[in-house]
Length: 222
Image (cartoon, rainbow, N blue to C red):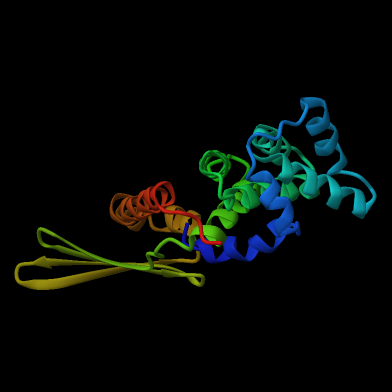
């Protein structure tokens, strides 16, 4: 969690499949219908040994517009990194379509993939959403005051620090829990990990929910 979205943004380069704007314009015409057999053929060609064939297949899938989204989602969930990256790239392009139903369907597709148990796929999908909508707020510091306790969380790419200060008989007693990541915090400092889960992760979830709300209510950046 703490190596937040910056790492995922770096993965965005893997999603950047090059297709022309004329292709995207074609995808904005929902009246153009493509046979399922053709879409399946093009998806299969995403794994071709020939680079030009992969590029052309990508262009054609994007050009198919909204109807291609289920095929792109299925391809993104496959085992081939090349195919998965290209499929996510297709969804990112369709997310920028001027056709609102296409845009909405691509948004939902990427949102679903970003929650995949496959962390690499989830990262690619999140990177595509971030590239189009912008990055959510990154929560790296939080202070909480509960009764006689003051809890401070600090975190970045270098690790996590939880500081617990309790006032006992008018005197402050401070405990500091440090770890390089969540697993280490949980293993070495169970008390600090419980505080992290109760307060910090809850705030992170709230910020992520706000990000999803923004995605659902804003138009993608071109």
